[in-house]
Length: 328
Image 1: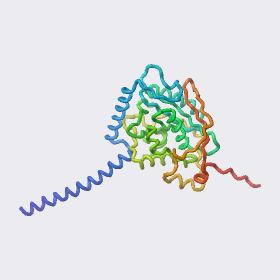
Image 2: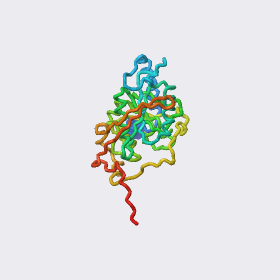
Image 3: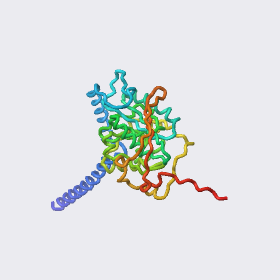
Image 4: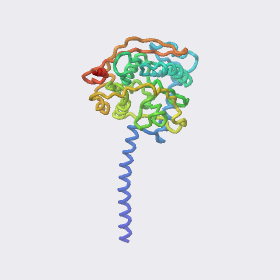
């Protein structure tokens, strides 16, 4: 009898220890999913379904309301269709890519009209002689679109065209929504990738202080922005198995002949792989040279020519030094 009691007690304490280990490990997993949201679990997919329902509810309740703003009346879609209360700003960082732009504007206007999403396209054209700074151009686009009363934004590459009609471009009330996730983007497939097309509310982007202004040249600004979202405990939402088109979900128009600026000047590489706690919307300095209303094949967009200001004490790599002349 005593031996049987001892056996029961051993089994009980073993189960207790195992249970504590399981709960401790499981809590770590749940915390990680809440902060990062790299891939979709069943619970995350259910949250996305709720987001769609909430978006539809908002559209029904506010169908009669139209956001006031300065953007063209051509975007107000006065065709008797319910476009809802929200207005999406498509923000395109841009320089010397008119061939892609000619395809992008008509495609996106038709695509979003079919989805009944009120929108306006902002082409933020870097018109200075500095190296290309995609993140700062997105910061400029946010500032202008916010003043135009758009209430959410898509950071959108000009060479990435959505083909699947089921993609979500709705108001991301529960958190940033990465449309071009690594399971769908035709080129970039690493888990922390948040480039291509990322949708946030204006409030979310403000709370993150926008994107870093330190990234001159090509690459890594999206990875730093990912860390901003993680550090601020934002959960990043993505599509899961409900999108079945895989890497054929988008048309990727990037020309292999177009050279990217991979130059790494002294101090730049270290900065690229460091978390930037200092720059963003709060430190953005630029000169708006011109605002033009452009129509491509009958579809409107706004082109903003801007000159970015470079603090050469902070980022001396904003300009590539001239090549040294060869001596003969």
